[in-house]
Image (cartoon, rainbow, N blue to C red; front, top):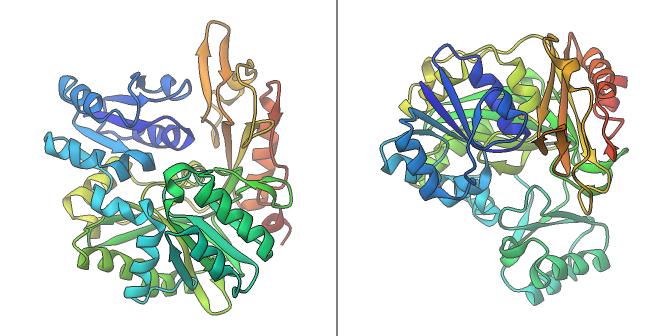
Length: 423
């Protein structure tokens, strides 16, 4: 079959690499793609939000299967548009992607269906939010309601910080229209875990667990980013925890969406906090995480197209999802200054070291092909992933591999998975 992947980051490169292994696939296109994806797929210069052009291209090229990797086109309704044109598409429809598109919606859903999460209040008025903070307990969490590239969450230690956060999100529109509404919720303490899952509207199959590092600097300091690295599996996500989550969070979420007339087919990413009171939901995403996909998908044994088709057809209960008995670590190589201000256009050297190297991957996030070679073209440039028999070995392999790559302005965290490695 001919497959079109919509998106252009490290997540989409990881998806494309998995799709390329499927015996069902003869040709892969990616819109808009990136320089790394261009090595395994034909990149098409159409933006992820150019729905009319994407549908027209899919029809003209006789695309058999579309995979929407990014949050914006999912929330915007690209799946609905593709389906209306008779094209099989993997991902939730617009009315289900709201699970990620509106934090206020998702919090209200959890409250209604008794799915454990942090206590919260929703606000559309900045003055009301400020007044609420006067009586709040700190630290406290502010979340822009809409999509904000993974950066719309502020953890505030005191009233002064929180009021500045409300002003930034709701009045100064730091995250644009995503800040038209604000969720203020209690600060939860515990271990964070990411659990990605395939869903067919009624059945859920959870993938291997992972954990992301959001802060820009070592020691979890600095600004929130789209993710500076990740590892899989999480040693804290035990079989016991998984069973509790399945019973109290995973299946209830799928059932709640169905009960609301918002049947969810695609990937639900559960951001979890393992608290003293049990696992609770931090957030939902309606697609693969980035960079979680870069450590989870390389460990998956199944044919990804077979699993995705089962989600669309409602046959996921027939799939036995399997993962390798190992570990993977991904370290993001970024441009110094990310996520605020950084320069682009620096030549990247050493990528050929990954060619044919079993268990090592270099996923492109912000790169561009030029006559001179690959150059940096974003804040997050590359995701260097390595496997190992356990997290300690995978981490050592990943940090060995990051030294193969050089570019001016190269920046990374040096402690991805370190606390786990040393535990």
